[in-house]
Image (cartoon, rainbow over all chains, first blue to last red; front, top):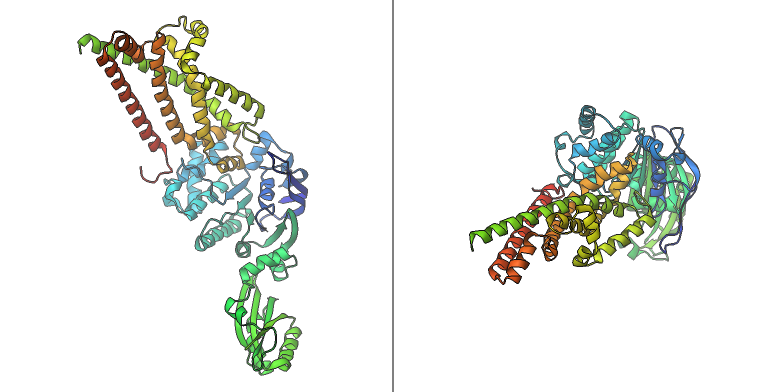
Length: 346
Length: 221
């Protein structure tokens, strides 16, 4: 549906600012009907990447092909026609303050030259689709963030695009509203078959909605594939750091302050077990207890589900000194858990 | 004050209003597109033409920095060419328009620049042409600012229109100079000032009200 072929994007030096190589060697395809997350830190090149898809930016090398058309080569009227089949939603909604919800949704239709009656019919369909029919005559200043983004989504879908680009669309929303907007996007993808490309710096957004993920850093794609594969076995440090954010891989302060580097007589070894893509994560403690007849303490745990797989870490306190520690370690390695010893506690 | 003098004031007020309203309309007609162009023609903007932008900017600044009374005198040949005469309220419209056009252009530029750049990007993202962006996004979104800008321009024009009185332009300024100053009638001078104050108040109040009416960023109207 969308294909990047050897794409690079550089911004020339301007007013004393040096030139910036925003993207380099971008080669990948976004399949029709998929939901693809593009995740990266601020300044990684995400915004440039998404703006190449709808022709708001031109690549300095390579080409971007959307639905068989080389969007990078289009300009003027041809480009404007192509843009009507690509919708976009924004972090700050970008609604016209001078227009009501319904009139904001009507804007792309007016621009495309639809007749007044057709516009009215389509707008009421869209208001219903995004669930804000009763807000049709409200101005953006009278709407909540979630309602504004619903107007934004309806507006982006007005001309029945095949692709919907989302530029940090939930970053300005609270977690609950974010969830409802992501649910709406999921149902739009499911029911209308719209291909969705999500730009985000939030791992939780990718995890909740996307099936494919592209991790970009400093203008390069560092990892990509199915969400479940990438986040159960992250290879690049950037990917690992995104994962750590959702899983909270840090050590709790209360535990960290008690950690000792040398074994404490009568104390416990503190082991952190990584749970990655197995379904055994949630039963580790009880199975160690049963199979090794050993009571291990669960000091901290964070297990989450990503792409129907358990991902997370358990921090265990193992009593009984070196012998039992070795026993536990060999049991864990038998099931291919990766383990590290954080230290010892009394 | 005698009936005759009151009639003089009414007549002069009519002349002033005529000059100001015609000049304000013409200056808006020219100033609005110039202002929009100034606001959208720098590098990488909607109608990017940086060198034209710079030249136009210099012309606008030059006109604005010329003292009005000097402008009036300097363009007398031009005024005569257009209006057939350089005396009277009709002729005064020409220098008033020339002075107000760059003023309005700068105010319009400022109001248009206030519009969030994200909205231009948004409209482009669904395939709006530059002209559609101007008419469907920039002007409606800048409307409260534009209304206030025009209000300010009208108020300034009232001041300028009093100045053209000094060179035979008619209107309230002319009346104030000839009767109030040269014939030494302080009550006439006072009356002229009071009328001008009332006019400015009315224009400003109406402008503020209108700007509030078109401003949808405020919740309660």
